[in-house]
Image 1 (tube, helix red, strand yellow):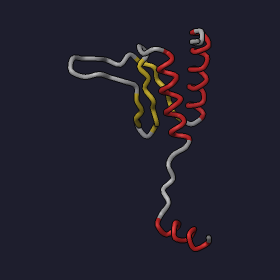
Image 2 (tube, one colour):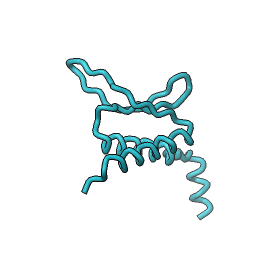
Image 3 (cartoon, one colour):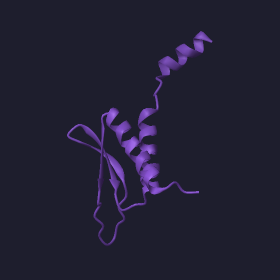
Image 4 (cartoon, rainbow, N blue to C red):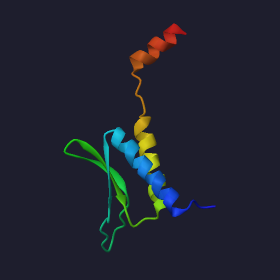
Length: 93
């Protein structure tokens, strides 16, 4: 069963607050469309600031899913382990 719209809006606002705490600006905008391409929400850097643009015309459930995914990805960045560190760990075992 789908959540009532006001609960979904509260969830989206909570995610936006979390993004702000992570120093990420979230902007809900009408992303312009023209013939020949499809636009969708995404992230970028503007003057060194991380920005997530959300297409405000998409269903709120899609906005929540997208933003939650982006924040989870940012919170758990992949960690590159150098070959030296890998060999050190192998030697310690």
